[in-house]
Image (cartoon, rainbow over all chains, first blue to last red; front, side):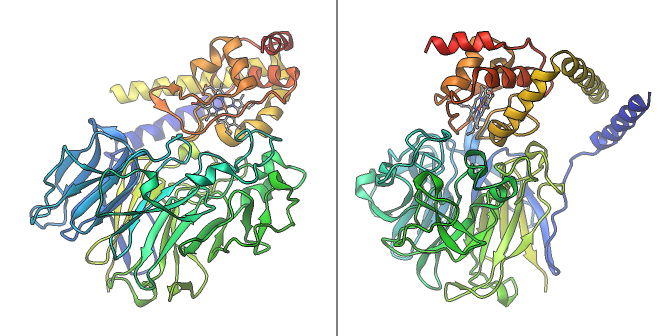
Length: 414
Length: 138
């Protein structure tokens, strides 16, 4: 009887909620910042880009009405982007604006569209192909992109693997040395944007030893590439004798690197451990949780708690936010799944203060509350999952969500 | 009105889940308990505690034909893993599923019985003999 009463009460609550037009979570920001939802219900909105005229471009990983790129435009300057344009019949993650072109990626191809003087695209249905045939084995196949100042494009080619075992994700299967995947994936490749119809061999393997560097941005202050990398899964599930459930949820670190040409971040041989501040040899390669490895690999600038999935990186170059934000890094954490049965973690945007390409203080949560609940015990109940970041010409920060297809615009009001 | 009806339906489903879980735990309690242990250790990380999986990466086990349908196909998935894309309720999932042939016949029977009777699923138990037979076919 009790149970029935409870259920009836729950149903009534649900009813009230259903009568509201749209369930929306309130995101939390530091004092002085405000946010506004500028797009919603577009499904899997992955990375985003904002043009100098304020147009917002979104790359979708599931077609909406047959289209994979959406542009929102505010025609009358009232702050509402009422004009929607949809094009591109492919799914994917990467998008970026560079030197008169909009670039967008599927999981194997980098396309580009030319802008005219009014910032309208001239070849909506016939994009140029910049690079084709990039590795797409489904796992870690999202192709994030960024650009330097001298006409090069950088693309993340994620490793289609957890830690390069003989049998991927198979408990007990040994790691491969050397890892053959690293020849054409597991790193960042550089391509020249003055050429079209390129393939992998036209590019340069710019940096290696990266499992999946989904967050990627060029830092114009110091003229270097910065990336965030998703660490390996399953330390606890495969090696409970070395990593208990809590440890396996916290490790390995998600990492944030400054990367120079030729650098190696150490995957698959090591993972970063932010408790020991060391490159720890992965157990598949003979590690015991303490032994160090990959002596030639570089160390990250920051090691974050495990599995939070840093899906986007943005080095802030705007002038709207207070001075401490200038040249610092915003990182969008998608939120974990591999922590189960421990509560999930992430679902927020963090900020790392930086000067001259080096952190000047501890990282902090900047925008929180996207999941709409705390703690998140069931991933499937999380309302939103931060996935993409973009900076507007006026210095506003945009955050996208690939769970419900929202985009927030975050502004600072002096 | 339609929304109210749908919510009422949802409530009924919730209620019936309660009783399903109860009867099945009583009926096959040992297998269910042992199956949950195997699930928690070897499946939960990907398919999640509520069996709803991870969007884009790992499919749900709640209400899928692979779980509640053919037992031989289901046993094969656990023994051999899956790498070819399969579509579940219109979605594809990008992770591979590793082979779990290192589990004993008993563990596989238990975990499959568990997933066939959890997360709102209700389907017949899987026996050790059925797993043994599938493994021998390899």
